[in-house]
Image (tube, rainbow, N blue to C red; front, side, top):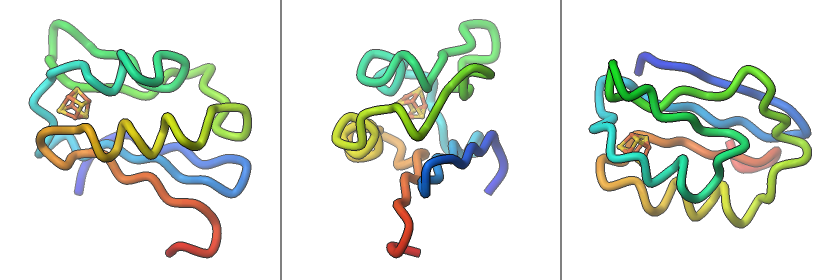
Length: 79
Ligand code: SF4
């Protein structure tokens, strides 16, 4: 797995760039965490993203909605 990863608030989010197809669904669902790089056509994680504040249900929905299964979202105790 290669790509950006972020932790905070007992949560971890990662995007696998070897899988990401650049659809942008994740940015549509959680724009405060995901940012689609239109040049690279890959999802990035925003520098100012605060995982402790981000809505857990939307992060889980972004993971489930990714057509390429590129997103990993874990909460403490799930690893
Ligand atoms: S939803 Fe998945 S494939 Fe689409 S940009 Fe986000 S990580 Fe990449």
